[in-house]
Image (cartoon, rainbow, N blue to C red; front, top):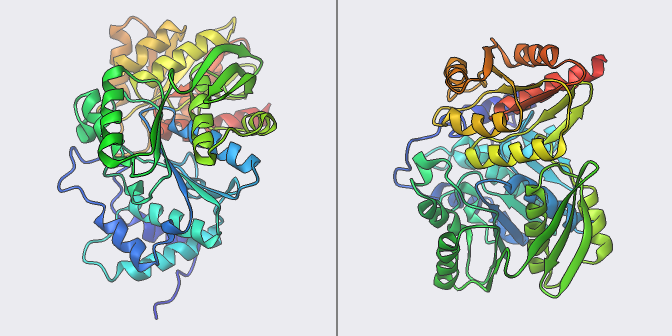
Length: 443
């Protein structure tokens, strides 16, 4: 029998030796299939079938919504396994049980077991497929009461779509990853609707009527138990700014919760909260108590999403990486972050993005200078391209040789009365967050 990995580092090297479509995304899916993940899970005893699941997709907001769902379910006393992507700092973050990231020892163990069965297959798994299998296997090992599973990209052909969610969540749909998912919102909606399974309840956030018709048609085609749509079946209203976040009224079938505190910045988090509460209510078959709602939302934290790390200057990181995300971030900056000094953004993004689409909402929100950087990935857009776009839009910019250097320059430019924002890609946010936390410690 093969020996286990000699160390955790060796296990990570094995994981990283597999093709990583998060770092090098194909321009299109050729012969898409879930056969590899399904076969691997079958060899491991189909662990994903040992617990119910809530499956979450969406162009934006799925990470925050996943965190809220996890928090509410945990407050109910359930043991919750949560799978998210990508990670900010270490891969362990993606796989959590009871709000605790998987330990190095446990991750080494599940990776070793996967390495044993991979030898029985002609085609190796991808890195994301291995992590998906690892999460589903680990949750079974921990005997979780429920898995909360966030899609990596799209829905139909995402590696996570081997789970049968009793609740399927689509937070919203807009243009993103068009090289893979399709060139129109309707094509993207069709792809995302693939997570809806027979007998499941579909939860749909704020979308256009055209998108809603696509989702409704999918529900009918597969025999879903029902479709809850934001603005019809459930809603967020009177979404107001509060100290450290939002106060919002949340309505679900048969119940209204008034003045719920959401300790996250941005009006969009009120809508995410409505989607999360609807998903949990659909799973339970009833509304949770007011005590669970208050405590569940009250404890939620989402690192890297409109997260305030420090003051003097105000230090903020947000993973806005597409036009819709940048608009939400711009609105959050205007509504909730009032500074008297300069507003500086450290910005880096991936190839395939339109820099102008991300820049314009941030310029409108008051960002006066952009420090342009390149994330540590082969897909990085040249910082010079971003800087040239800044010039064409009439806003100041400079190019930094590294994210760490870019953060230091931004802090110096902002001064104590200003604001430093790191955004554009989670690769940038992860590295910038570490440096900003160091800046805070040094004060």
